Amino acid sequence: MDRILAQSLDAPLAYDIAKAMIEGFDRHYRLFRAESARAKHRFETQDWHGQQQGQRERIEFYDIRVRECERRLEREFNAAKVPMDVWHQAKLFYISLLVDHLRPELAETFFNSVTTGILNRNYYYNDFIFVRPAISTEYLEIRNDVGQTAYRVYYLKAGQLQELFGAVIDDYGLHVKFADRTRDLDRVVQVFLQQMGESRLRANFQVQVLSNLFFRNKAAYLVGKIINGFRETPFALPMLFNSKGEVYIDAVLHGEADMQALFSFARAYFLVDMEIPSAYVQFLRSLMPRKPRAEIYNALGLAKQGKTLFYRDFLFHLRHSHDKLRIAPGIKGMVMLVFDLPSFPYVFKVIKDFYPPQKDTTREQIRGKYKLVRQHDRVGRMADTTEYREVAFPLDRFEPELLEEIEKFAPSQMEISENKSTGAKEVVIKHLYIERRMIPLNMYLQEAFDLGADNPRARKQIEHAVLEYGNAIKDLVAANIFPGDMLWKNFGITRQGKVVFYDYDEIEYITDCNFRKVPPPRNEEDEMSGEVWYSVAPRDVFPETFAPFLLGNPLVREAFMKHHADLLEPDFWNSHKERIQRGEVLDVFPYDQNRRFHRRLTQTADKVETVVPVSILFADEI
Image 1 (tube, rainbow, N blue to C red):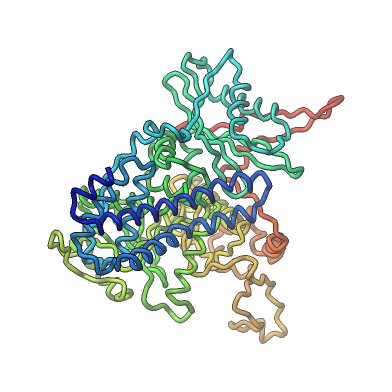
Image 2 (spheres, rainbow, N blue to C red):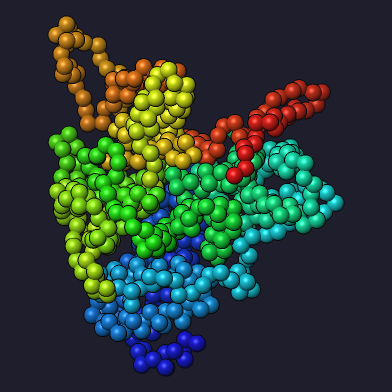
């Protein structure tokens, strides 16, 4: 096929360029997959720091390989000076090379990245990049005759569910010792039998599981679904190590809500070895049909593909909506200019050109903070952000006030130009971040304040918000992150009621901070002074000073002191800092503590009996 096209089109240079680009992509995915596969060995050997390091490094693989490919094209073909008709034919040749490829959607995105890195944006409109996919991924697994399948299927024999799930676990080939495999299997079966309720096991009962485990932080996750008649139940089994170095199943997560939480946009990317990524995405979408494919690709560590799909979804939404981009509701930030489209569940953030005196920072430092978050374990408490450059929006979709705001605070980041293909006026934003829209926590609290202190709903809403806020900070602390600016406005609340941090310009590592108690005043003059009477170094933090800014409302203070008074004491912060400095990697779970298997130990003559309080393990299915 390759030779036929090369002969039929009089452009051997175009073919050579296409061939070099597919070789660049194949090298990228080979290294990406190898790093993902190493996660299994690191889990087996409990190499948690290696796991974190591997995850951070893998994030950088894509950009490194793109730059490598760009340099090769410049070196071998003087690519920047190649005529446009050659680039057009190179795209056609590239499509021919994807016909039997197992990852065509990723390869198309790689082509876009390399091409746009070489060409000026005025020249890479639709003819030269993949605005829409050229190769379908729907039947890739059927065509993959020699490789591994994306998922395995297990059928029930003689009514033995324990044996079935035992075979499922054994087939992953983990080189670990289970603390009590029989106990864990009994627990899993008990949960599923209660979840299925009175419905009997149907003739077509089967368990489907993705062929490779998902690794993140200190856990391995088995992901699949149970099919019983016409009912499908998605599930995941998290596996952890105990203090003796033995593995156990910690919980049974099931239903769409549990899966959404596990694959949340506020968590770090999974390490999972995938021969056919689109098959994994298709399977996961059957578990979470309301989750955008872009977010699933992101969760699998394929963020560039997530960017591609997100932008396609956004263009589609623009074509089928009529509302206008506006300044986002809420308190305006000092560093970021934030806007949104009311009908679209994301916000767009642009770094301003200048900041107030109290914000001693630069554009490069702010971008560095966002990069830190992208590479870090976000533990469900920091929103994932997608970074874009040279993004074109239709001019007529902007509210005038928003254009004035950008011209005033970020003029270097905006350019108005004409689309070469359509002739329509566009606003090109040179650099921005996009993240999921949430309700700012200060607005969520204000809604409760407006109901009145005697309103039961208001009190419940305030307590939930404060409890989640403190839990979010404690999860961040466990991940070695100090938020910096802890005001309510810098946190948002998701549709699931989780509090997530999203303002990153002042974050620091806990281990880089010095948590101190405010020294007592030396004299009456110090006590009456409005100025601090003690020395303060750049990374000194005084936790007790959080209270005046956070706890002005009596109901907020009551809830905060009930649940999180320790956040106002340096001892809390320093104890975690010391644990992290000792090399400990703390556990942060993507499910509530009451979803874990609780152990009640009852001494018997020769063993310890484990009793599972099943009643607390279930949530309503969505």
